[in-house]
Length: 553
Image 1 (cartoon, rainbow, N blue to C red):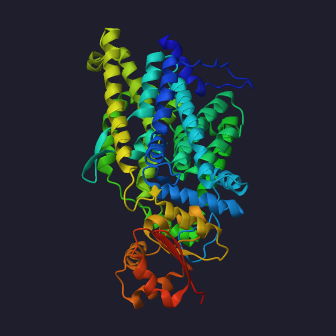
Image 2: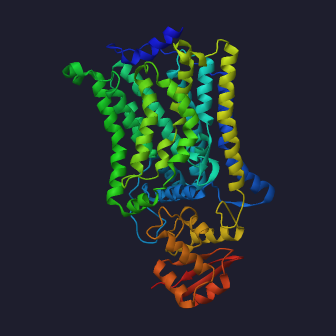
Image 3: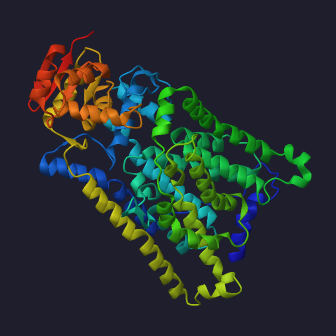
């Protein structure tokens, strides 16, 4: 049976010239796979469950967010609202005019649903079950293909690690799990990232099948383009893996290059690569020719410590080194080996002036590392020399070792992430996850008021303004409220806290080019209203919150 597994792995490089392919029987769901799917689904709804608990038990006013860091969720919500008007997205986190130039397929669909009357929060949340299911089934499919012939236990171990692996690391001086390396964390408000990883996996799988059949198909390129449009880091990953997989280890036959240039395989690679590059070229143009994207790219460097990533991935990566021994096993085997290396290259590129958010390069990397680790450990039984001693003769001992390793590599990290989420989503002062009912009424007033104009407010309400009112805000998201986001925060806090002189307060409001001042329940309302009275057209009060409309001109 072991020999059959090796033959099936190398079939992608066989010179198949028929238009048909070898039958691929569908693998039925294992009960433990269903259990893993249920566990992943439970983890994915953990944050929403905590939010609903606050609503049902304590009567909180929830803003409908799904995530620990809600600034990102409010960014997506503002995109949905902006797309509901024109299909394209403009930066609503600045009061100056900004062009609607950003097209993202999932946001476009949510925007259309919002235009037809669906609340923006719901139009955004619908992607959560889609992303969770897509990622699970993609990981399961790739696990079955790469570990074909390795047995049920090997596939279950790899799938478990791909879904739940995590290791406590030192992040900015604190012991914590690196969120982007934990797929469950990505399900908390980052559905587009999970969808992009799933699309990348399916692009590799469909490419490998088309390559085996020696037929030109556009599905791999379309899936790769979708991944790049949703999350450009995944598009870059696919391009590097595709190019590396074809250039290394028996991909292109350099000795017969003339015939190779006429081969269906090269046409497939060219079409797939061309489609995959389209969204990346688009993102590159945005960063070069649009001021909002230029400033946002510079503000999202997030110089995340490489040591934290190394510690987090270290245990799994060390075992994964065993998977580099022996033949790769066709294009998919080479792709599995190249994925972690490509992630490192993308991380390094993101640290330069041409990149952004370096940590996103490692999204989904637990899947190839898990496959390499399990595959490498299973191969120890065939290894001569001292490594053979790591493969116990007793099957019970072998799988006890694997069971303990998988348990230690998944359950502690999952527990820590869920515990951290429990702390982060609790209602606190200045957290836009839960707001006061009066503040919600003020936001609703701004949404339905017919007078146009931007809003200046505290940072935690400012981040809600675009998504809940459709208006521009002076301050709210330091990736997009650029330039000088820090000085915006400082001046706004001083204004709403009543710490400025009358002249300074009026100067801040005038220079912000805002038409409305949204005073939160924590603001020094009476003092601010008195300071801004010479500029005021009207004041509308909602209990502890109020909205000041300024005179035009």
